[in-house]
Length: 222
Image (tube, rainbow, N blue to C red; front, side):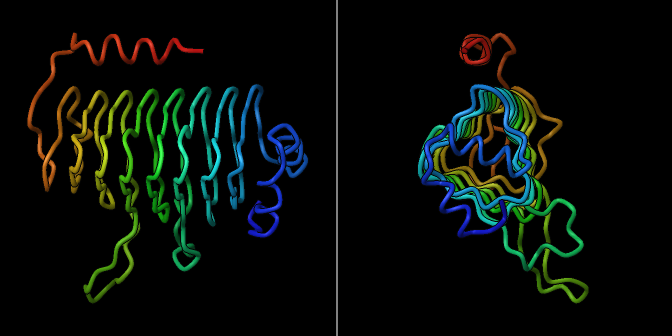
């Protein structure tokens, strides 16, 4: 559904009618899915069983939205955008994947010029975090740079965080509020990242209550 005006009209429909329309348009919509009054200007939509999108979220020019089982955009005011100016020769353009039972709260901004992957059971918490996959440079050979953002499984991202292009965090990572993530931490699990630029401030024990009890309850939730 990559026509903005059609996306606006569909957004006004009740969830069950919206789901029927999206299926008729060729999108993959599973069982027990809920879609609130949000604008889905997306070329291809894949919503697995139990996925939920609440009201007042905006998707602009995305190529492919994939939400796995029981994942949720549980808040309002999230923006997921990509500029057509960065479409050419960019196979990751506008691709957003939200893992099983992962959740995004509200009022976050996702620049999806490159691919963004949010791992299973991860919570993008608080509000006003920003995820940039695109930047510009004054180098001679190139001006536009598009790089993916990868967030591992069972992570927590606090309010007002910034992720820059090409950044990544490993599983069981806690990102403190206001952190600016500028590099790849995929080889670091069970850590606290904090600061500007974000650095490893603490290594958590694997039996930490937050990772054992909180995520266990979240993954068992129906």
